[in-house]
Length: 253
Ligand SMILES: Nc1ncnc2c1ncn2[C@@H]1O[C@H](COP(=O)(O)OP(=O)(O)OP(=O)(O)O)[C@@H](O)[C@H]1O
Ligand SMILES: [Mg+2]
Image (spheres, rainbow, N blue to C red):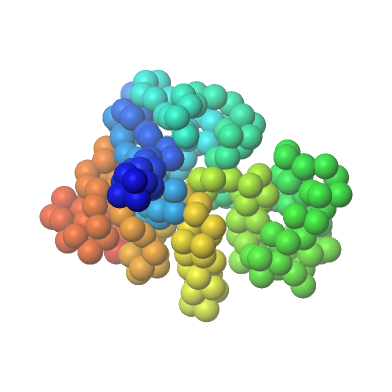
């Protein structure tokens, strides 16, 4: 009996929370995302890397319902979420940040986060949950500052807080470390790790800061010209000749 139970728990832990299968997105003659498939499990951090223009943000736009795919499917927690609207994606538990941050500039930090928290909660509960999230991302002292007055670094943190405000089960992070100094990167790395390993969120993170993504990710997926060219353990993936060639062919490290 005990052995059976252990086996069933193990199987549950290994089950994908999100399954992406054969996604394709074309813009005219350009195939920005070309037959991309991979899975993400609860508590897992997947790094999504690739040169500029590889299709990473486009893939996020599809997963979060901000853009439709031409073909392919997505299953989230056993439900088909292919091409469902962004609001519905947030409702089922898909949270994301935007590469180009866009807070509601006239609202305070707290109010920005409350907007998302109201999706699932009454006003009072949303107010308290939003305050807790603002503190968790280390912005307690900026709680009542208008978002328009924040530095880029603080806007990035607010972006993360807004993604968390919908109480996601999967978090899509689009370059939230870029532009941060070393200690800010370290703080964010610590926070992302605790969200995945402590709270059990699945995380897909697009990141150009390779040492950060290497230290965080359980697995790395590499895109190049829309195609998944590699997937596996961080140390193994960055040594693959195809991956090195993709990066050497671009302006990046
Ligand atoms: N709305 C759009 N209309 C037309 N082309 C687009 C659109 N969005 C993206 N593209 C093109 O699709 C390709 C992939 O872009 P995408 O932004 O997904 O790349 P990325 O991997 O996120 O790059 P970066 O690292 O620079 O952020 C690029 O060639 C881009 O110009
Ligand atoms: Mg991008």
